[in-house]
Structures are given as C-alpha cells and as structure tokens.
Length: 364
Image (tube, rainbow, N blue to C red; front, side, top):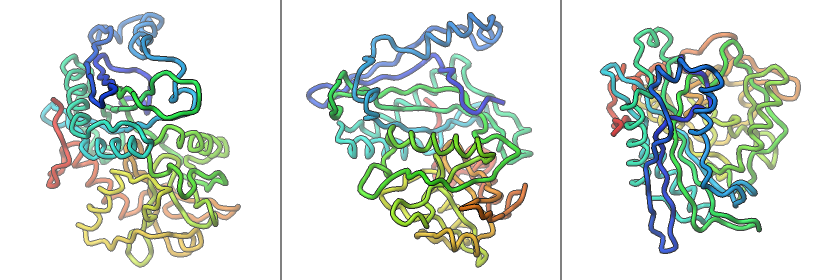
C-alpha cells in the first residue's frame, strides 16, 4: 500500500504557459527515470538524487506572486486502479471546472476545463505506460477499499516573476502525479474545533487557493499535537456553526434520519466528493439538508459524523470536542450511514460498483 502523501513525482508531467494574447502554449515533459523496479532497487542516496531531479524545475522563477504571496490555486484528484488493469479518474471534468472558477476568482487568466481534462488524463496514461501506477488488489475490498492505493494528481498554477504585491496575468499551469494511500492514520478519528478562522465572508474561502491552506495546516498540526486526528473550523462571525474540516467537508447523520452538511456559503469549498456524497445519499432515500448547523444542534441531535474530500474519501469522525466538551458519535466504529456511503463511493471509484453517473474517466 502506498503512503498517505509523499513527494515522489512520477516521470511525465504537463506544463502550459499563458501568453499575452490569452492563448496557452503547452508541453508534456518526461523527467529522468528508470523502471519502477529498477528505481526501487537503487541505494537510498541514488534514489533520492533521482527523485530530486523529478521534483524540481530549475527554469521556473523563484520569486513570483505565488511563492511570495500565495497567489495561486490548485486541484487534487485521483486515478484508481480497476479490476481489468486500467486506471480511471474520478470526476476530473468537475475538477477542471472548479480550477477554472478558482483562477477567475483570483483574477487570473482562466485555464479551460477541456484542456485541463485532456492534460490530467494524458499525464496519468503516460505514467501508467511506464509502470508508474498501482495494480488493483482484490484484498482491498475486504475493508471497503479504505486502504487501497491510487494515483494522486496535482494540477496547480504558478505565477510569473514578481516582487510587489500583485496578481498573476501570465501564469503556468502544471500537472504532476504521485502514488498515494490512505490520508488519515488509522486508530484515531477524534476531532476538535479550532479557534482559528479558515475564511471570512467576502474572502477566498470558496476558492481552492494556496493561501487558504496555511491556516488549515496550522490548525491540523495543533489538533494532532493535542492528540486528535482532525481540526474542525467554525464560522468566523459567531464561532457557533460548523463549516469544514482542515481540508475536507463535514457531514452529520442526525437522529431523525437526515443527513446534514453546511450549506455552501462563500467561506466553504464546494467539494466534488461532497456533491457526490449528497447525490448517493439522496438515491438511497436519505433526506438531505444543506444548511447552517450549530455546535449545539450537533451535540444534541447527531448520531454520526464524517468528513469527505479527495484525500479523506469518506472518513468517520468518532467524536468532536468543543470548549472542553466531547460529543461521541461512534466510538472506534463506523456508523451505518457512513459505512454505506463509503462502500458505495469507494466501490464506484475502484470499479466494484457500477458507475451509473459517468463519473469515472479512463486515462489516455
């Protein structure tokens, strides 16, 4: 099984540069590599040297609006090994649309969603042709594919040179891939609310912006140091309503049988997995409620909690602690609603459940 996240970039990458006239000049780049088996057999220092060459681009500017001010955006999506030996990407068209919207929100030239879709499918396909892709393991099904491996795809923008505070008018868009396994460590699924504020109304919370993840990273690390798996953000104004996890949307299965998730205000990222979960739940006859949901309501009326996202998938939260009080949902277990949605979503992604929505795209 692959590790959660590791900087082991695969050989093929994609890069496009926006020109002054708004057109994009693109290229596929093959970085230094051996076969996967040969790389695994290398001494640690030689393998590290090879990966360093793949992980870096000497011709990109060190000082720019992205490195200095976080002026950039990115996406995260996965390609999943299928029983027939192929790879299939989960809803990459939606990631393309969201990145286009993020770039528009940051007043950058927009990278067309159609070009995005071709780029990510091609990079995944070229790396698979070199052997840089996990093989399907039937044993993953025993745990509903929670511990299955996949290809993580990271498209991101990177600004042109700049030192003064400004916006990017001629960015690059780059696509790289790396192996990935389970995001959260097993054995602890407790969460705690954080006093930090992820996003304010009128800000960039709805954009998958680089800068948003500084506060998220700090909150998550503080939660881990306190013995929790995850940090949960509350609203900026009243600090009384749930918004999202450190890098994931949040759901509550209520005692009345409904499934509640915070409504998409401009402080919450419109998750693609979130949208998929809502549709799957609706098809299973579960009442869906997208609205503001308070800490007080959750502590008295929720019976399950889970987070969703590309990295998180669907991950059960056994308890949430807020101001010294703990609401326990499913101690060391996964609730029925959470498990059913997890089983269906992962089954679709890994080809064990029929994809009736056209969510899975083959690599090119």
